[in-house]
Length: 202
Image (cartoon, rainbow, N blue to C red; front, side, top):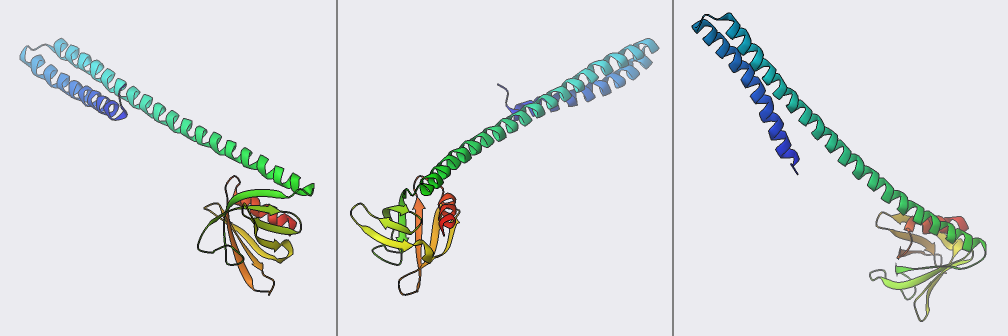
């Protein structure tokens, strides 16, 4: 298969050759027409060189047009593929979010696994811990495999937002009324969906 750069060189060469041939035909026609005192030779040489030159120029433009069409088609295919991937990711996320909302509406604790950091309880703000978070209308409970690490009443959650790196941050009040922070990176959900879920029960 001819690469785009090679196609550009071919089209450019044909274009230059067409112009050169037309110019040479004019020069040859004038020279030999005057040499042999033949006006017909001049006309024949001029017409022939111009026709061949125009054909070469025309073919070079066709090659350029085909190259543009191919380039635009490849870009369109890439955009369609990316759009399809984004749509599939969105649909998958949307289904998961609806499942969370449904479970919550049925008073079923929503269980979400991931990694958490906090400046309260048995969690460390500088070290991620593998946890499971259970969310219901009353509490947000952070647990490890063996024990409960942190319980946050939903009414004490002050702020909840998500970051571009798919982590969410909670600012809440502890039992003494002091601000505390919980960072959580869900492993199977979008942080944005979890934030929306928590906001819906506050």
